[in-house]
Amino acid sequence: MTPFASEMLGSAVLALLGTSVACNSRLARTSGGGMPFAAMAAGWGAAFAVAMLVVGRTGGQLNPAVTLAMWLADRSSGVDAAARIGAQFAGTAVGMALACVAFLPQLSRGGETSAALYRVPEVRAPLANLVASAVASGAFVLLMLRLVAGDPIPGDAEAAVEEGTPVATMVPFVVAHLGEASLLAGLGFFAVLLGLGGSGAPVTPTLGICGRVLHLVLPIPGKDRTDWRDAWLSLAGPALGAVVASAAWRVTT
Image (cartoon, rainbow, N blue to C red; front, side, top):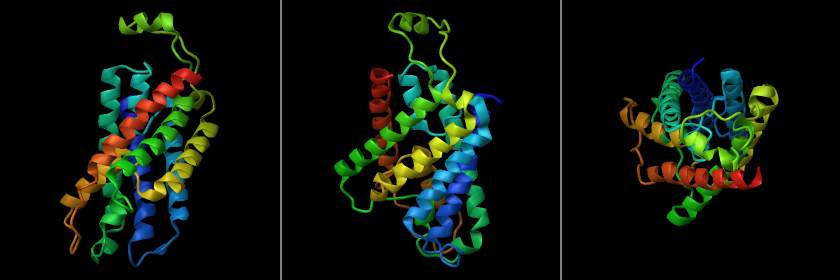
């Protein structure tokens, strides 16, 4: 499986399962309507673990922030990173669209359908929201780097990387121990959402952006207005977290 196909498939599975959990929690006339936030966070964590298992040992990253950190840490090229991020957005859009089809009767009843497709901060405070998003994303990205990055590149090999010469590295943990890596990634996603995610801070750029786009374009009767005021957080917060996480990975590995 190519990196593009791996990222698209994994992102689609993550978005399908996770968005279904959100729809089941936020929409009326569902079996899980009104489920506690902790249960929804657990559902998202399980969705991430399943997505990791689906892509197998291909090293799927499933989050643009993780891909950005891999590039900053010299673990991938710019072309590879761009292709993976494009696949992640495409896969997320497909997965969320499928979830919307599954819950179309509930979405068609109106109400705050936006809550099922994207999140907004519980309290709008731009600086605090940005910090919360960066810290939450950074913690999760650092965990993912431990699972998918392998050994750090020695300082004397940086020139070789710039010249395109492959550098031998340790087999990434996810390749050697797929089941354990998937479980750890799912638990990490659950912990981040249950903690700092409770503020409404975005952790995954694809979900915040694709969710808003789908909410805008889907012909859902009686839907509320799409809220773009905090869309920038879905990009800025995880990007800042990726920068910090890649630096922390370099100095602690």
